[in-house]
Length: 340
Ligand code: PEP
Ligand code: MN
Image 1 (spheres, rainbow, N blue to C red):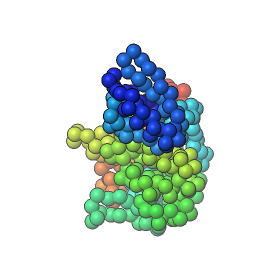
Image 2 (image 1 turned 120 degrees about the vertical axis):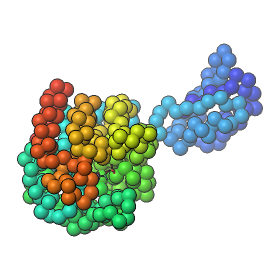
Image 3 (image 1 turned 60 degrees about the vertical axis):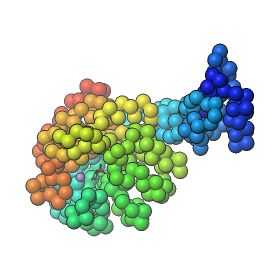
Image 4 (image 1 turned 30 degrees about the vertical axis):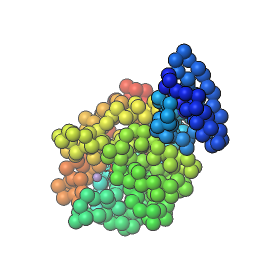
């Protein structure tokens, strides 16, 4: 961290900062410019904040040189990190496609949808069993029954499954049935849940919070990485802005920004931000073009009767077309669609 003193900072004001640093086990490297003194703090500064020093008398500015999300930063780990899920490796040259219904509604519907999407090339089957619905009167998911159907379907087709967790108490169920544990947008900053999942030996799909900055998102990933779970996949799913034409604004700029700041793989969910199926397809294509390591899309065989998110769910045939299109885009970037 760097502390910049005001041009008229007094010796006493500098001594106050110096005493604080030495009393807390830090060393510092002063350098005196023509007008201002600049101190470089030496030591593990992860517990210090620039805001704390900015209000010291005589200090004009303070900022970090190293990000607070140390383990997730590219500076810490220059090469892309790769997360293996089934036969697929996310974060390398392969594009991973996760697809399936918003909610698992019955064993049959999950099987009917999976049969088609697996034929068209999906690498991971998605489906919610514990749903974060805005209204308590909306379908809340089948709970454990839904997880069991996911496991049975995944085993039948030899494909890994991903589902969203909402409560710490459900961790044993997810450890038993699910291959990739999803943390939904609404729980990105549920730090208690993150701390517990840091000890779980499963890949975690961490969605971006509805109003989260990229820095906050990476700090949430750091909760997992700092305690030893390095198998993290980020998922951009749109943020809330003033624009009302879509459910959320899909921030595809986060893809190259994440690639610059972090070594973690990132996929994009174009379904939840766009909200209408015809808008999902162009943004899925754009996500691959922007450099995402994969996509997650909702697919339903009878979306008019879906218990959640029918309007944004692709028909299986649309998913088939999308797979063909992203293959071409991936090819233009020297990537391939992972085999399932
Ligand atoms: C979902 O993937 O089913 C979901 C609820 O997504 P999000 O957390 O991004 O809203
Ligand atoms: Mn959904």
